[in-house]
Length: 183
Image (cartoon, rainbow, N blue to C red; front, side, top):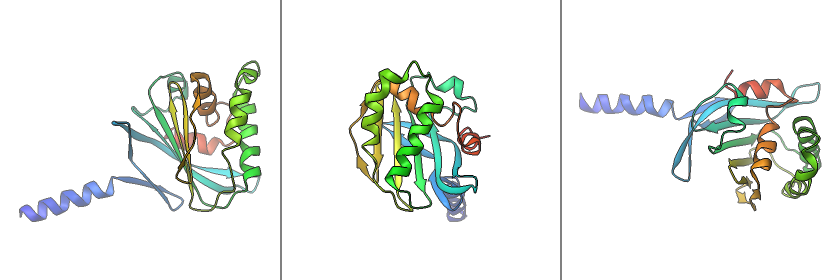
């Protein structure tokens, strides 16, 4: 009987350790420097009027929230994992980020961020289906890991807020936004 209970408990815990959307599975939690972040929500980025699936993203935070206004200024760490479901050229990635920053960052804030945004664009090369980007949002900047390569942190709380905003403030993909917010 003990073996049955242990096996049943394992099966239940194993089924709650990940979430899947569009055939992409992401963990329910991630450990960030000893702090456990929970999956807030999953969303699929769709591009063009055809709704072509580009990546599945997951937002991780210490405490779940469906209101981005409550966590954009929050100093606790956050992370977004993007798992690509198609190949994307570097130029298309950069164009997407340019549009996202333009939509989400107030015009008067862009000049002070521009040099760091330009550095961020240099991080991109062509990405293939199945590859991952991980962005860790810290109070003092953003750590980027692209295709398992950790890149130099881009410093500044203002950059952290600006970059995290691209998914939520004037978002070009409302479905992705709602998914990340767990709606």
